[in-house]
Length: 182
Image 1: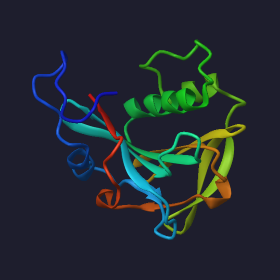
Image 2: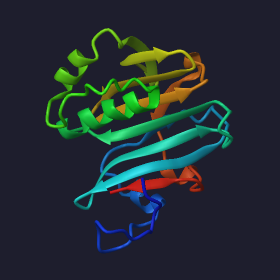
Image 3: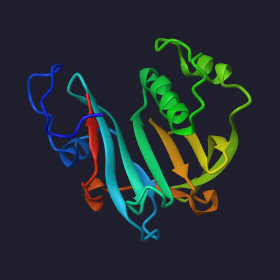
Image 4: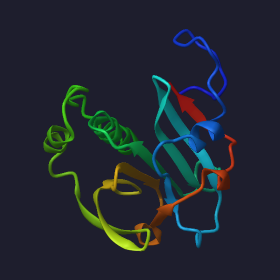
């Protein structure tokens, strides 16, 4: 992933600041509800062909050994479903080198990873939403389609009982330590 505003060999203009990318996302961004009072930072974003395709919001203290939870909201199309699952596999270190090709649909990806995921219910905007959870001990990840958005929650040393999600304003998230991708 590349820092916001940097130039590289694959694009001709600098990326806009991460906060601008997050504000122009054409889909709602999910994060922890307002009753969670810990640190909040913009974490990552991706722009593809000028369109924002995902934005990640990090919750927790900045130290690597502290618990952290990242909620990434993805554009809801089929292209993003595979990317979402690859993000989850990367977070969990469960990539077995046998990932299906990038052009397959989410159902095939789920079949490939069958047995690793189980249903888990999370409060989203005050209503129960079923996510698919993979628990790998101190690390876990869960994903669901929430309306038109695919949401990935990836955590390290975070108590799942403390997860309640809502649509959030990216302006409430600090920018330090953030990355963008193109």
